[in-house]
Length: 72
Image (cartoon, one colour):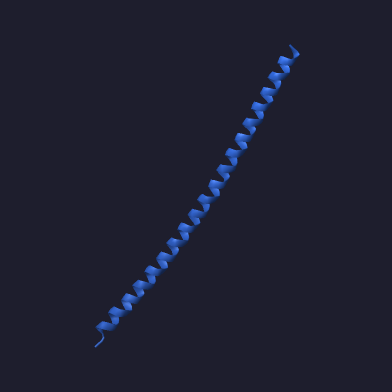
């Protein structure tokens, strides 16, 4: 009878250990994906800012050209 209880206790301890490992693994994956998401958002903002700057420069250049062609 005591051996049966010891076996059950070892099985329960193993199950608890496996659950703890699964939770830790899940939290690690969650944290790593949130880092990637933050980096992607930062990259998106940088691209947007650079696109706006390029658009402004192109608009200014075109306005300068249209003023040049109107001068005679």
